[in-house]
Image (tube, rainbow, N blue to C red; front, top):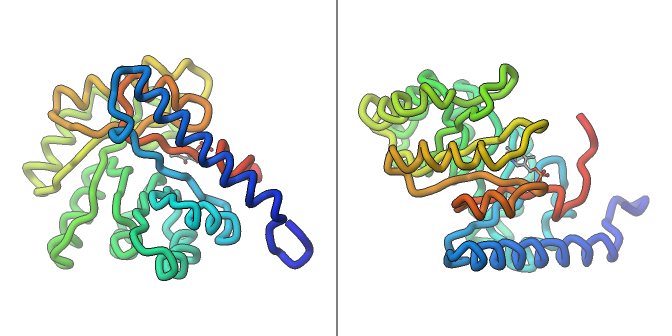
Length: 234
Ligand SMILES: *Cc1c(COP(=O)(O)O)cnc(C)c1O
């Protein structure tokens, strides 16, 4: 950043180059695992980065982005959407039931459906609005205390309840493997749960492990730091 708050031209070029390289790597990984590259969608995770960092990537043609907080998305995305039609915004962080209405106004895809009270709140708001976002169920494959998501053991019943009790069209599953374990077994587990529930989409793989995720069937990889650079630590 310069003093004026404008990004240095070098940073803009770097991010666009990094974005192009990640896209290429995703396509290559897809082909190497015998898949059509068009079946792997890059969700560019722009959390913590401002419009000045995001805009060059939008200008280069990227349209699918992920944010983890409703309020941050509200601050950044309405203005960007006006300038760049066709944006598809994914919520990849936990959603509080009292923010469902606002989330539905901002996001096209909610990847973090993770509990009955949220499913119920979503169903209510969808009925009121008359249209639904695309929905993924988050699975806590590592059964980590601090992480959101249904456990693998609860997943089938939760997906069934979303569909039957709440009338929600679930299109896929999402997971964030434990940071201290090899991710592949978690990706394989998510793929297995999706297959037995008839779900076509798998949101898995981040900057450090998207190659393995694509090999194991990821349809959506969520990539932040490999494109935008390191985020400030919370
Ligand atoms: C931040 C975040 C990402 C992106 O992580 P990187 O390692 O920067 O690619 C992906 N998924 C979720 C849920 C995130 O919160």
